[in-house]
Image 1: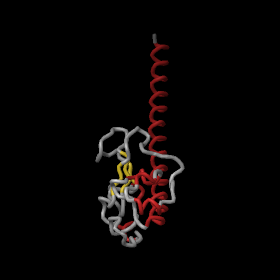
Image 2: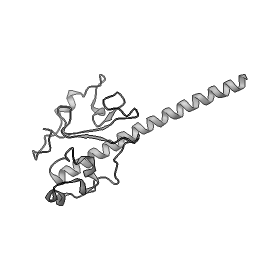
Image 3: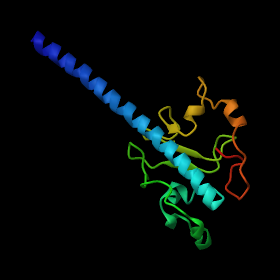
Amino acid sequence: MIVLAILLAILGIALYNVLGSDEKAKKKITLVQIKAMEGALEYFKADMKRLPTEDEGLAALWSRDAIADEEERSKWAGPYLKEPRPKDQWDHAWIYRAPSEIEGFAFDIVSIGPDGQDGTDDDISNHDDKKNADGEVDEAYKEFQPTDSGSGSGGGTGG
């Protein structure tokens, strides 16, 4: 009986560590995907002279059909991502906001994380690496955001 209890305890610890590692891996993959989308948005902006609208969303990075205007569609030189990524690691749709809800940035890319709820502590965004110990975007990052070239993309500065 004692041996069985010890084996169950060891199994419990092992499962806890494996499952914890899985969540950490998913969060790291999500951050990498967000960085890739940020880069793709910059290429999109270079070609289109604007960021995708919220209606076009991140789908504009892999599908010309996401661009409503026929003339605009002709400027599209994508796909800007190797493969479509309509959902995050937890199978939730990405949240794309343009302009950003954070002053000084042009857009937000957000994964609502494992809990599936927007606005909670497990959300992962393209601004996470710019946050200070209090969880607020450090003012120093806002100073160095390049200005947007105008063009009606929303958001006064690039990010």
